[in-house]
Each structure stands twice: as C-alpha cells, then as structure tokens.
Length: 330
Length: 251
Image 1: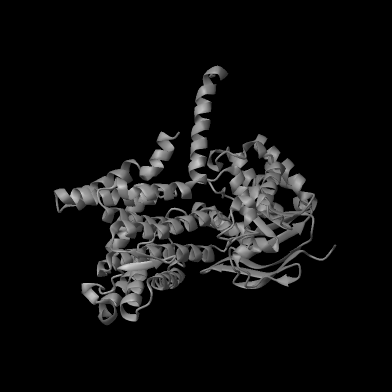
Image 2 (image 1 turned 90 degrees about the vertical axis):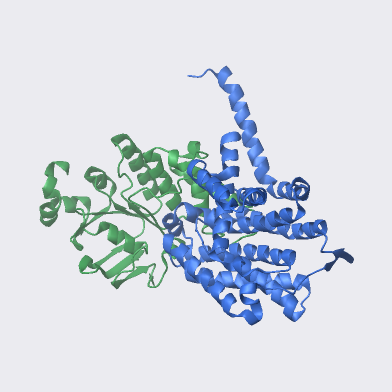
C-alpha cells in the first residue's frame, strides 16, 4: 500500500500531464497553425517547408482512413496525383483561374476516391489493400497512356502560376515565402476540417469500426457506407495536397501516381504515429528532413531513411508523436 | 397485447450440404423470457443469427410487429428494435466503458454527421450513464473496456445492447465463462431487464434457465422438438431423451 502522502504528488503530476494532453487535443488546430507559421524559419530551406506542408496534409488526410478507420490503403497516390493533374490541366490547357483549378482538383480527386472506395471497401484486410493498390496502378497507366493530356512519362508542365490575387492584393507566387504562406492557408483549412471530422459523431463511428467492425454493425452502423464516406473524405484531403503540390512545383511528375508514392505516404504516417492527429504531420516532417539532410551525403539516402523506418516499426510502433504522448507525457 | 411481437415461419438455414435449421416455426409474445436450449450444434446460435439479421435464412420468413424483415440489413435490425449480445465477448476493447455505450447510443441518432462536435450530444452521455447504471458499471465508466473483469465485460455488452432501448433483446449465453458469484449477479440483472422487455436467451446453465424462463424452446439437430413452460420441458420424454437425459443430475 502506498501511503496517500506519497501517492499524491505523482497523482498531481499525472493530472497535469493529462491536462496537457487534453489541452493539446482541444487546441490542436490553433497549435498546428502556429507551428506551421514558424516552420519555414526553422527548416534549412523554404522549398523543404513547402514540401512538409504538402506531405503533412496528405499524411493527415491518409490517416483519417488508416489510423482512425483502420483501413490500410496502398492507393492514395491516385488521389494526390488526380488532384495535381486536374489542377495542372485546368490551368495549363483551359486557362482556368488558379483557385477554380484547385477546386476542380479537389472535386475530381473526391470523385475518384468515391469510385475507388465503392469498389475497394467491399473487401477486407489484405484484399482491401491489394484492390486499392491495383486501382491506383490503373490510374497510373491511364495517365501514362493519355500523354496528350498528361504529358505521359515526361509529366505535366506548362502551367506556372506566377502571381495570384488574394483579397485585392497581387502576390508574387514565385517568391518562396509568399508561396509558403498561401499554401499554408490550404493546409490550415485541411487540418481544421480533419479535426472537425475526428471530433464529430462520424469520427466516433469510424473509431468504433476500427475497434470492432462486427460490434459496430450490431450497434446499427452501416459499416460499408461509413467506410466509403471515410475513404472519400480521406481521398479528398489527399487531393487537396496534390493540388498544392501542383501549384508549388508547376509540374506534375508521373511518379506522383506511382505506388511508391502511396508507400511513402504510409511510411510517413507510421513514422509519425497513426494513432494521433499530429503524428502523420510530424512523420512527413521527419521523413522529408531526413531526405533533405541525408541526400546531401549520399544518393543512397533511402537506405538510411528505410533503416530508421524499420527501427521505428519494430521498437516504437506508435511512431514519433505517439511515443512522445504515451512515454514522455505519462 | 397478445399479438406476437416476433414470428418466424419455416426458417431453413443451409450451410452447403449441412442443414443447420430445418423448418423452424414459432412466435414470441411481448414481455416474456424465452430460453432456447439444446445440445451443442443444435442450431441455437444459428437461430439467433437469423433473428438478428447476421444470417439471411435460405428460406422462410421473419415478421417483427407484423412486418416482414426480408431484405432488412443487419445494421437496421437494431433500429427496428431487435438488439443482441454475443456468446464471445464483443465490445470495443480500447474505448472507455462510457464510450463503448455512448457510441452505441449514437448509432441511433448521428451516423454520418461529420461536422458537429460529438460532445455537444450531451443527451447521449446521460443515456450511456443510465445504461451503465442499469448494469451496475457506473463506477467503472472511465476505465478502458479491455481491462474490465470478464463478468463486467459481459455486463458492458448487455449495456451496449440495451442502449437502443430494444423491444426484443437476444442474449447469447450472457453467463458464458462466469463463476457462480458473477452468474448470480447476471441473473439478478436479467430479472430486472425482463420486467421491461422481451428477452430471448440461449444458455447452458439449466438451473438458471428453469428459474428465469417463462417458456423454453428445445432445438435438436436444427429442429424444434419441444416448446413449453419449464415444468413441461422438464417432464417432456423426448427432451429428457435427447438433452436432459445426458446429465440427469444437472437438471
């Protein structure tokens, strides 16, 4: 028996930590926006910061499906690529204003996600992963063949957005800092939307399905429809990431649709931790910083990043942020 | 109120060449406890799965409050008023006890709302706490479900089933794996519940069934071989032969 006098201080500390955690959860959107505001000044280059922004959004969107609904998709590159291609084609070949092109990219990505989701959420486990992989590869080959639209193997070019108008101001979009902060608004919007979804009754429903699909169904949840909605929402956020990347690079590489890109999204999410809101974003940050640093040393940077990844999966399966929350904050 | 609440007619379930239920016809009237007994493999769980929509029968019909349930999806059974628990504990292991019940309550109200803050649905919290109170788990509300004792997990499962305020409650071996003390508590709980709703029970503990049931159905090889009060069943020669006869002392 611990005496109450001894137990009290540790209890108080535990209480404080729990308080910290609930504060982090409650203010996760303002906190992450604050972090995003500071990010370009903390990283070695502005281009890296923009990449973190883009892949952070993609990983957070992916995690809505992976971490929260419990579905391992290997096809999310399709939505990222669809968003990017549609935005690029809309601007480059139809002269659509950039903001409309972004909207088109997001809507197009959402539609594709709905279709792929309708086909894949009928299956379970490894079959689900394989179906998403196969469908995404189908999208890849369509983009490869339709070179009149997509530029085929060379990727899509010729849609540089050099300046944008925002609230009556003309902003030079080629300036890296301006570009970062414009794209940051999209990232902030995406994080806010995902946070609201996770806090919503629907957020509780997908967690219930992840925890115990059979029980969720017996409770009265239409498991298939719920999964389809989660899949579509997740794909939509990833498509937004794709449009951001198209605006950023003024180029869509064909590889953005490749399954290796899907795999990278999974890696980032696992590295940061799939069980938390911030985890995937931090995973994207660490992954890209490692790439940035190690690729200066060696062209085989993937060996190092891969080793780190394997070590994390083996020894810290909750990822960087998940481990921080459970080990350090407890 | 004498119209049947739930009626099944000529239910046949085939798994490949195996016939799990052959032409089962019966009906259940409101406000009673009916137990379904029978040796292992008699078709009890299959029967429950049919009544809760898990299995669509090969032929035959189920009518609930006069309406044919043909084509009703499994997840809609609970919205119609038929809820169930499982033989093997089936809860949301990593959610808190309160969240387990709350998310079940939410299924009746907000399934696709992606925008409102779920904590605004305070009515769900009250209902969840009331259900936990009914099964005696209020003190454990903030614990993670997987850390509860076995008996408490069984009680939690009943709370989850109860939250939809079902007219018919199907309980598949609620005392499976329980010791005598836990079983006693469960029986007390079931008696309390029986006052308010129609309960169908699959159980193996004879003493408990005889004490609790208004009516007993006996299944054997997928067929209904007896149907009557506990007293009738105890004296039914056919039942004694196929079931009770195997362990006389137990009955």
